[in-house]
Amino acid sequence: MVHSGPLYQNRSDIIDFRNLELIRPASLTTAAIEIDRLLSEGRQPRFIAPSSHASALALVDRGFASFLDSRSVLHSLPMWAMKPDTLDVTSFGVENNVENLALRLHEWGAERDADLAAALYICLCEAGDNILFHSGRASGYFAAELDETDTLRFAIADGGVGMRTSLASLGPTDDLEALDLAMTSGVSATQEIGRGFGLASMSRYVLERGGTFAIMSGSAFRIEGPAGLVRRSLSNSAAGVLIQGILPTGREIGIEPVDATNSGGDSNEK
Image 1 (cartoon, rainbow, N blue to C red):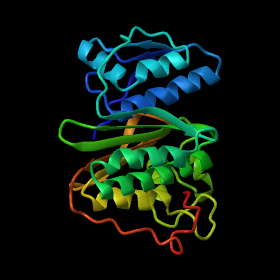
Image 2: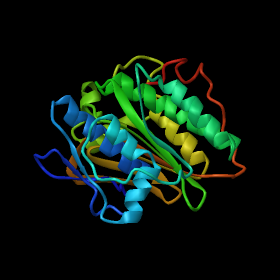
Image 3: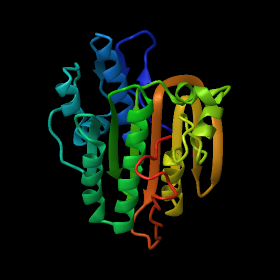
C-alpha cells in the first residue's frame, strides 16, 4: 500500500515520472491535483514520462495522455494503447457531480461483485462530499483499476488545504493527530450534531470486505487493513488529501446498509 506517486522537483513546474514503474490510481490522482495547482497559479506544467516503455503505455492505457492534452500539458507519452480494466483519472466537482461519477463506478463494479459495487458507490459519495465541503477546491480526482490479481484499487485526491487546516477548530497539534480526528466517528470540523461520519463509515465499508484503507494529508500517513493499523509521520509534506482503497473482489462478504437516521441523514461530511 506504499504510495507510488510522482517525484516532484522543488520549485519547479516539472512532474517527473521517469523512475516510476508501477502505475497505480494514487499516482494518477496525485499528479492530477499537482497539475491543477500549477495551472491555477498561472504556471505551465511539464510532464516527464516513465523511462520504462511499458509504464508509459500503462499511463496511456489509463487515459493520462488524454488528461494531459486536455490541459495543454507538455509530455512525450505515446498516443495509442489497448484499453485495460480501469476507470481513467476523472475530475468531479460542481460541474461534474460526484454522484454521477459514483453511479458510473457502480455500473463498472456491478459486473464483477454487487456488494463491492455498493461499497464503491458509498465510498466515492462520502469522499467526494468531504473533499468539496472542506478542501477549499472546486474539484477532486478519482481513478480505479482492477489489477492482475482481481483486486480493486481506487484513489481519491484533492489539492486543498489538508486535514490539519480543515480541522483547526478542534486543535490538532500535527498532521497525524488531524488524521486520527478525521477518522473518528462523530467528530466534525463544524461540530454539528449528525456530522463527522463520512470517512469513518467509508473506512468501515472497506475493512468489512477484508480490504485496506489509507489516508494521507500533509506529512501524515495512516493505513488500516487485515494486518492492523499503522500511523506514520513522513519527512515530506503534500498538499490536500489522498485516500486509497484496496478491495478483494468476488467475496461473499455482506455490507450493512447505512442507517441515515444514525449517520446524519444526507450530510455525512467530516
